[in-house]
Image (cartoon, rainbow, N blue to C red; front, side, top):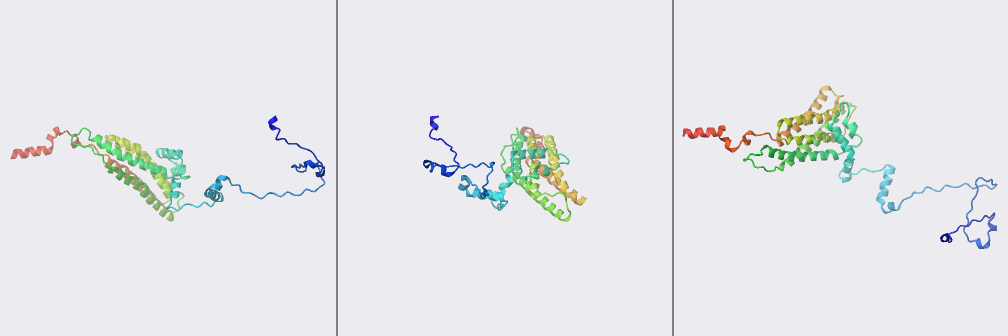
Amino acid sequence: MASNSDFLLQFTDFEEADQVPEERRDDTTITVQDSTAGSDKPQKPRRSAPAMTIRSYEDDSDPLAYDDHTELLSGQKKSAPFWTFEYYQTFFDVESHQVKERVLGSLLPWPGKNFVRLYIRNNPDLYGPFWICATLVFVIAIGGNISDFLVYLGNPQYKYVPEFRKVTIAATAIYSYAWLVPLSLWGVLLWRNSKVINMVSYSFLEIVCVYGYSLAVYIPAVVLWIIPNEAVRWVSIVVALCLSGSVLVLTFWPAVCDDQPRVAIAIMAVIVVFHTLLAVGCKAYFFKTLDVDLMTPVGRQTNSPQSSLNRSTVSTR
């Protein structure tokens, strides 16, 4: 306890200030009053200290952060202009588990469940649709090249050359479909809502989000298109069309069901037709069917009609 000898507190009770010894006059004194004890002296009312704003050292070193905190607390946070990066950054602010749930929801549509209301309405994003479309583009381009290689494998007349232009063509087709069709549908829904009051309405971002996630099922389907078997390809197309088309129909039917029956059916038919054209068009252009003439070996092409015609021509001479 010798180390604490330099720091000792001594308390002495004095009734009055005059009773303090001369050698103790300069010491610091603390007066403690018992609030429970009765006193004849009136007590002065205490004044509360004015409110103080406490700012940390980090806030002082970063005045911009303090301004952001003040704007958020006061509800005066201004949105960034659309030509800035911060404006589009909010569209990609989504958690990984949310993207996973939305992809699974697009793969397993269920009647009576609205995809927008269940997965998108709280936080529509462009992160999932962008990367789904990018993945589909590369899968189609790479799968198309592999399919051509497998179709003509073993044919000495065929020389495999990678077609990199398929990436550009696939990107143009996929991204045009994922943006232009939702834009057209959004315009049609706005036009019909001005004539008929519908209980359900969607924003442009929500429509783009639905179309983007509905294309997720085509990624495993395109992988199956690599197999040089037309039966496998068409079965995968039908399955993918049923799943992705169901997402679109179940989502957009509540937005047009209050309209005239002919108009509602026409809008849904156009949605399904464009969705079908995308799948069939990609399959027909990027994945060729088996060509019997090119697969025939060189030594066995003497019985072809052209060779028979050449032989008959020579014999007549």
